[in-house]
Length: 331
Image (cartoon, rainbow, N blue to C red; front, side):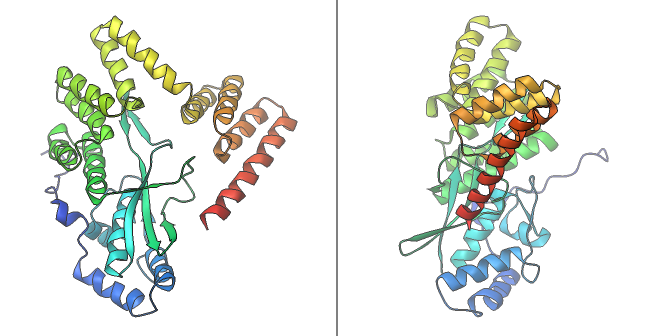
């Protein structure tokens, strides 16, 4: 085996993904359950246990799609793993916990002109009429809409889907295939998984199967931008100009109303040194959604590069105000 190719561990079964190891259960009992009363006091202890070094001291890592046990061993987690860990521990502590999903933020990975789709997730806790959110990436993520509770089946499907995408980039299609199959088995109506399954089929050399899976994703979610982007690329590469035009038009109708697509376009403009183009795209993003400070920070930087200091200062003031407001909302 070449030195650069690392062996892939066996795929965990669904019941293993959120299983709490005995050592972690004992630590939770001592530092959270025995240390305080029920309700909000216990939730605060749990949050401290997750984040502080005296507890688990979890660190955010974007590619750390892990089981609860693996997260405990490594003390690393991305948003999905952190959600799995939080939900599992909250339930052990007697709290009503569940996964939540936000699907209107920038959550794509582009690799070799292929788009992978990811949604952001966090943990929800319900106490009577009150709802709380625990989110490891709370300072990195902003969204227009509040998170929606999801089932354990879908939460687990997200785990297998994300793991498949990671393996597809870092290992091989053969390693990713069982994870992708499990994601679709757990939630056959998960459009994002079907779009990523199409990527897997293409990497395995089967463009017809890839097309089938992209179209399945669109049947479930007609606004699936990742499925549309990949279909357009597929038809461009195989010379099917008629279908490429059809799906390009569908994609453009979605993108022109998507503030986060405009944001990505603005960032691309900046990378090319086209600051006038960046200003136009940032302003379009703001017209579509005025609530994300990143749009204003970007606009301020682009104005600064153009020497338009007054406009840059105005945009920066708005960015700072939004950042403070979003910080208060999350506390």
